[in-house]
Length: 262
Image (spheres, rainbow, N blue to C red):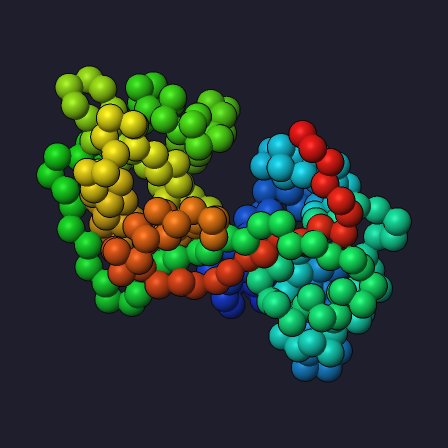
């Protein structure tokens, strides 16, 4: 537990950069192998998570064995981290630092498969609340089909709301047109997810209104907002940029095996 506390303390020095590591370590430390390397003033952290522990990884990387996450304050510790990687196994590397690839690629034939951008509000930014939106701290069953279209299961949504999540939505009568929900990711960082607009409500700026309002309520509660988007989702990137959000970190997924068709 002492090592766990030390690792968490180091990762929390830059929580937005390390949000994926913090989230996974908090939720799955009991099934995760974690390593802390100390070399004088330099340190490195390696987290190894079974690929079937997290629903997203199980769905996205069904052929993988282990998810690899790491952070360090110097490239000098990278060889020591690499030495602790499992051999002869199918790995998914989730890396925030591009220089990591130079050291890893000498030993592993890595293939880039996905990249995600994390945006957040700049210090001092102010957002306004849209008066037509509906804020709910309870799970609204009407919104489940829209969130399911983004890949969220009912169980995931229920878990988030049990932990304090809230939703922001726009309706026409009893029909939801656009929605998102905000959930606790780690400590003070709360994620704006599940952004989805029904077909009949698209190209009207509804998503921007619900996300802007979600940002307002997130900041009002004293949380740090995070808005994550895959780099191929151009409309969502434009949405983040239109709201003035700042790119905080790029997280790239690499695999050392050939993906099989699902």
